[in-house]
Amino acid sequence: MIDGVMVKKLKVIADERGRLMEILRADDEMFQSFGQVYMTTAYPGVVKGWHYHKRQSDNMAVVRGMMKIVLYDSREGSSTHGEVNEFIAGIHNPILVHIPPFVFHGFKCVSEEEAIVVNTPTEKYDYREPDEFRVHPHENDIPYDWARKDG
Image (cartoon, rainbow, N blue to C red; front, top):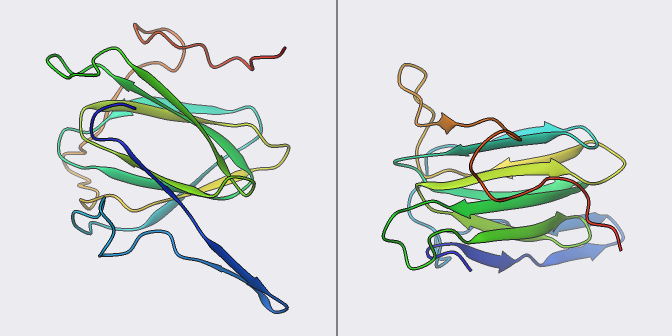
């Protein structure tokens, strides 16, 4: 596991009315601060990545569909420099992925329906100076291929 990354298995409580799932609590080990909560989606087969933040940590949970969330540690001096982590997250595997600053991350919708991610970053989005640094999803130095791995 990349240094600083944490994964929390989420508990779904279902009854005849529906279901409830806590995602992030102030008493969780990975909770640092609250910036905002937002949702983003991807259509089947779409890759959204790569990017990293210098100040904020992300806390991502997939609440509809299935996503492949991938992280890459490019931090010089990190004990896990060069490591790639891949998580399959969503309705069939409800997890929260905590992503520290300077760790590249992206995701791909791997379900047959639009997937929805809820993110609770530690900082609010700064429209004037976004804490977001991007590289092309396929043409970059990250040792990862977004293609499905059959076999």
